[in-house]
Image (cartoon, rainbow over all chains, first blue to last red; front, side, top):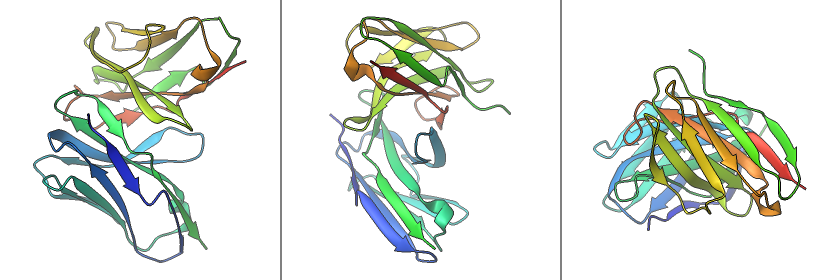
Length: 112
Length: 113
């Protein structure tokens, strides 16, 4: 059964700092991995999708990497801003069950 | 292009009642998935529909059911509501599921009293 873990559970940084969020998964037989952000009480906003054959994806100040063999992904946020404050979730779609398994998320606070 | 829409946004029900939630996917998307989000369990997969057929189901009791219509709109139904069913219910659409990017709606907040 796929298990997805996100570390740390919460992170607080000053504005302008570069930061890394971590996601690990136990079953490497995946279709893809997707990073989302969720603002309080709201739905999920897709940030980046990495297919199993890819190593990284970039969008603006965000860069996500995928190391399928070690079951790890990182989300790098450059020059953080207060508007980046949200919960960040990673999710993997696994071949076996073909469902999406989510981590518990990292709650990020960027202080002005 | 319109995003995923969910109705209603908020619902208050009492134990024992039933409820129906609706999801309209992005135009052209044929896969719709449903998730339950609670503070204790996080996001959990309920089921996925593709071309009016349930393609996958999570580990939830039979009180949770769903369907998809020919226009790809989907509904989920929860019968005999329990207090523990209070949650944010999210639906997501994608072109065909599997390797495609998933896009989420704003969710329906269900409170069971």
